[in-house]
Length: 403
Image (cartoon, rainbow, N blue to C red; front, side, top):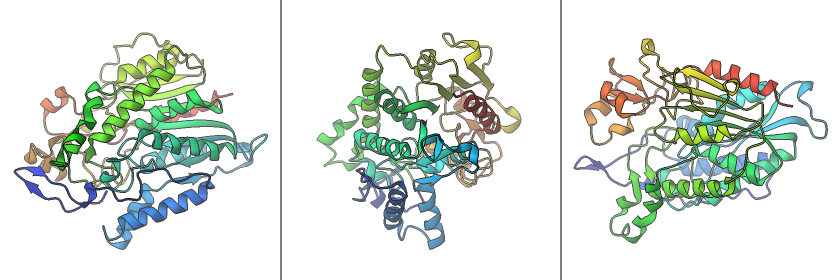
């Protein structure tokens, strides 16, 4: 989201227009549309919502980054036996995020012979207020739609999901035998039980609208909300409970590639480790970013596990993070020299540290917002993967082993 006018009172951000529903994007309206038409209509909707929020060139940049998209591979070796392509992958972004986060992976998949489609989940890409009324079933409808469109063009369907997108991808795979494999990045398989009470605010938020929000922030990011409604957290909690019920007693037989940070403070990494311990396919692999490579998780065979040291003191990086898996260091917005700083953990309680992060103070560290890291100094939450090139090598090895 672009930087917008924010009113503060007593150190707290107050609600603005972006914290109300736009009326455009709380439901999935793709239906049976061809994918290119879905992309066109969604892009037009984004232009309407973002009109006037920035200068024309900047507004178009915002729209392009938040819009769904598609890529086609080149060459004859990607042709399918029964359909135009052998492999197809549907990319699903995370909660409060957008398809922008899936772009680098999309380019990688297309270069490796995949027909690529990336959807925009309802409530996302417009303004945070659109998450006030959304339901997780609308996200599931978008994923199911994407699978249907991909199935028209690819012999084999794979799902690649980041964070909540990983949760939705697993959910779809358990209900849809067409899914041949999964790529999971920081999958959010478990969320705090406190989120189950997040919608209790509805009893009194008509008196105190701010009560409907986990956090009301400046929303400086172009492609991600910083403000978070309690409803969004509640919907994620319900989704994880639905997935837990659906998967109870079942093994995962399809190949799974997963990448996660052991220091993740958003998703519960032990749930990912448990899921991968039950991923029985011999090709399944887990890349685990950790500051303690000597601490090997139990239950996952050594041949399925790749431990990556995530502490890079020469770069000021203390650890990897939930948000630091799918983007490369050279990303122009979230990368090492990008124009965005994730310091919302300081807002509005510690504005001195918040401004130090945003002003590029030389002593600022990078990593996950763990208690240990926060005690080490002023901390920006890491938004890129310094090992992204190595991640692509691991992904290529996994893809080459697919039948």
